[in-house]
Amino acid sequence: MKKQVNIIGGGLAGAEAAAYLARHQVYVNLYEMRPYVTSEAHSSDLFGELVCSNSLKSNDLDNAAGLLKAEMRVLDSLMMEAAEASKISGGRALIVDRHKFAAYISKQLENNKYINIIREEVKEIPEGITIVASGPLTSDALTKTLENLLGEQMLGFFDASSPIVTKDSLDLSKMYEKSRYENNDGGYLNVPLTKKQYETLVRELVNAKRAPLKKIDEQYFEGCLPLEVMASRGENTLRFGPLKPKGLEQEDGTLPYAVVQLRQDDVAGNLYNLVGFQTNLTYGEQRRVFGLIPGFENAEYVRYGLMHRNTFIKAPAVLNKTLQLKNYPNIFIAGQLSGVEGYIESGASGIVAGINALRLLENKQLVSPPFETMLGALLNYLENAHIKTFAPMNANFGIIYGVNKQNRLQKASEAVEKMKRWKESIHG
Ligand SMILES: Cc1cc2nc3c(=O)[nH]c(=O)nc-3n(C[C@H](O)[C@H](O)[C@H](O)COP(=O)(O)OP(=O)(O)OC[C@H]3O[C@@H](n4cnc5c(N)ncnc54)[C@H](O)[C@@H]3O)c2cc1C
Image 1 (cartoon, protein in one colour):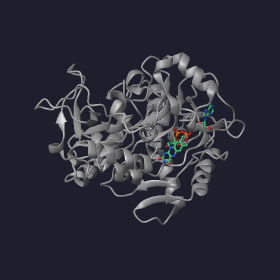
Image 2 (cartoon, rainbow, N blue to C red):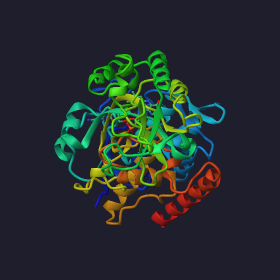
Image 3 (cartoon, rainbow, N blue to C red):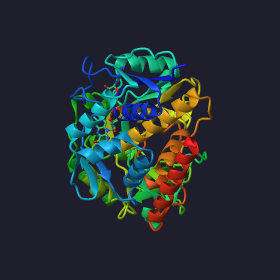
């Protein structure tokens, strides 16, 4: 019988999944709604369009994005092939000519006899094995279908994320552990602020440079205000909001003037997010202003705070690390919609969705890369993160067990070797 898979979305994840399946002689129906229906961010009808920056980040192996790209090369990534063909000499970062990059991907997909391109908006998920890779700006009709399938609570629509920092980059002598209501609701670190420190932070937040916003992003603000907007509403707003000291007495019984609270973000306890610090400040300003918080002088950010429209599923509740929906074995979710964040992360997840769609066709056990690899760790994070606070995650070393600044390069080299062996094992 003809092996066939449907893919919804010809973005980065959909393109990778299609390329993988076609390489393994699986027929693909690749649905792409552009140019008939388009999103606020896309501007062409090309596959694999980069909607914003033209950087695929660092190529260095001891950088999380560099490691993920090395792993993608092991897995014969189409994105990496396109990047090689379209790169602009950009030092240690992989910068591409965005048109050449997307044109390369489009040509590979369009000229492939296994890939049947269907230019239409999918409103219902088709019968048969299907990879949904419709991205952060999934069309309204398909979003509604996903809501009906998974439940309204299982979809997030806006990425209003607080920065995440590594614990070992913080000066913990300036912080104390305490949960606000003593109900053992997870690990918290608290930074006490004096009146002067609090006032300085508020002043700098109000005056800091903000990233320009797209029209689609502005409408969400009232429901989830950025820290700097809250700060500009009055001197005490933050002290009665995310920086409130209530319930956070120090060991000597005193209550600080204000408290910056950090909440554990990963199972291993390497990552902490700044509670209530969703922000639209530029990355440089986040480093500068949050660097004023005691203990943050050398903070390492694995993810900066951001705010933009972003449709994603609450992966820890509904998705396996194989990218198969727990309750719908024929449906895989890949790309930004699955809860990863970023171009390469989206593309990489598309490869795994392709691998598992093929395995499902062949009645083989589904797989996920080893958790010592960046891609494996990312998918492991999707499966095991806290559901309540889940927000999309990008590649970073904090999600791999046992990696620190000193052993990064060695662990990264080992991860690439593990990925090679994993590839052999699944194709052997
Ligand atoms: C405004 C914005 C800026 C971003 N900037 C960056 C950045 O600079 N760097 C970075 O690393 N990441 C960035 N991201 C995050 C993310 O990496 C990109 O969105 C990335 O393109 C996600 O890849 P994807 O394959 O999941 O989705 P996409 O690349 O968006 O692909 C999804 C595809 O599905 C199609 N589609 C949607 N609905 C349907 C439907 N119903 N039927 C058929 N087709 C459909 C879309 O037209 C699109 O082609 C940004 C996200 C947004 C929203």
